[in-house]
Length: 256
Image (cartoon, rainbow, N blue to C red; front, side):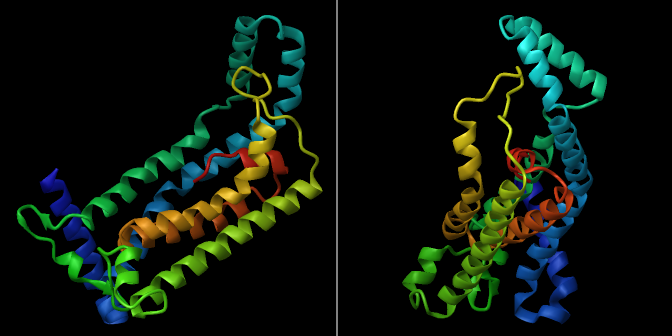
């Protein structure tokens, strides 16, 4: 693990060296943003596939409703019929999970890298790098202890919070507009049965974007940069990929 972290630290350092002429002391922060963009770019084909899969599953809802009406009293037959339908239409119920799962290692790598005082037995030099005076290994409570909310470090976090809030507001408004323009149909699970409480969950899901504010506040600044960049990418990507999709399908698509 230490050898792997050393290699990852070298990668971040190399990206920072490339960007140093353009971003000076903020080169490492810029390298993290670039790293995040490269990860999201690599995962984008899977995100497109997930969007196609979600649209296909949404189009299957009338057929699923017919199967539920026909086999509602026979769960085993219902499950088999659903599997046959998905196989016939070449739709995977789990395809939407892949983009999110593949991004998790990148986030945890950054979190671990900027939470470790040493890498490979040597002091972690990356902890000394900063963004506008805020160390990349520090958290929001460190900024509050050094200057408060409106101190130099605190203002960096206020900027990140503002971006997250703007993105969350964009997501919320977009979902509400979709819901107003498209009547919602009952959501169903893999067995074709209505999912209990899914109606209420669908209404709450747009608000979940605001939970990212908590993540940004508690993780190291480097990991927070990853979260903010990835969240912004996701909002723009989803707005494009799901632009012609009814509200229900778009809201229930797995977060990316």
